[in-house]
Amino acid sequence: MVARLARFVPRHLQLFLVVALLALAPFHRAEAQVWNEQGDAGDLPGTAQTTVGNGGLTTINGQLANPSDVDMYCLNLDFAGASAICLQCVVIQGPDVWFFDAAGNGIAATTTCQSGCKQMILTVPTGTYYVAVSYDGMLPQSPNGPIWNFSNQPQRAPDGPGAPGPVVAWAGSPSVQPINPYRLQLQNFSYCASPVPVQDSSWGRLKAIYR
Image (tube, rainbow, N blue to C red; front, top):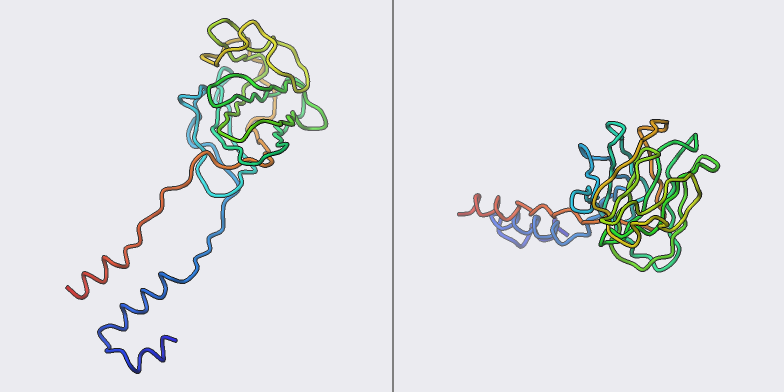
């Protein structure tokens, strides 16, 4: 098509047409599925790390920097149905996984290892959520106390004196056990935010050429 246009369009306009045609052509980009912790993720909704990308989010990789470190991530659920979270584990007293709504209220926790996974099966409305990882023994606190009681159990709803109530701190006696670095496997979740598009500089180059 460009070759045909070249016979009828003045040479000084050919570059402009090529750039315009390329801008109109479909553009496909591979969408990442993995989020790697950037620096140290915060431990509360106000400081949680925002996952950024397009499409589904299937894996979060992170590391607990010290025994009292807690990593919290913001993610979205836009799937009307069951979703799942699996924190890879090797021992019961390894890192635990916690799940909160957009206001920081506890929804579910899994603090025991079964078949290599601390797993949650969730049926919650679409929206924004937070997932957190801490060493076993570090418990989320609301203004009224622990949101969950300390015990190693499969998935359970908040059962502590601080429930209901938003997480405002973490406290406890952590047990440092593997696996760390940790890996969260996610099903039916997506990134918390989309990347900011980079403005195409083609028009700026054209103005520089033909001004």
